Image (cartoon, rainbow, N blue to C red; front, side, top):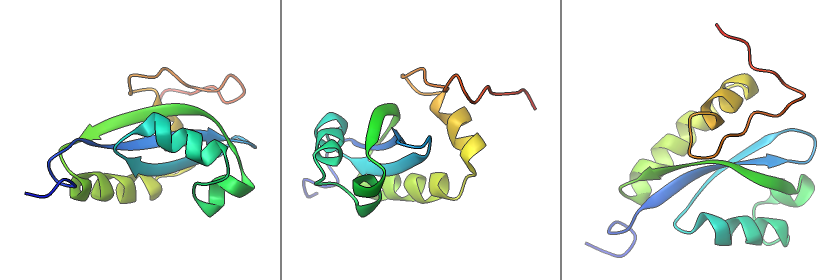
Length: 101
């Protein structure tokens, strides 16, 4: 088993400037967030800098995290905000109230 599969990987959601959500994977979410903030992350977060970590979800390996990331990226914005509310980070933006249903 190599080091990529023997440690916990996380899918994370970031709130970005303009109210969008960026989804990615990392072993160390805080370090990856700092990289995004410093312009060393994804092209998207260079254009829309992150404001905060909305959510993180643990997965047993990189493969599982990548599959979850792909599924989350297929969600519309409303569902991503709802998903962010199920993480260990409570984050629903006040300008976008979540409605039941």
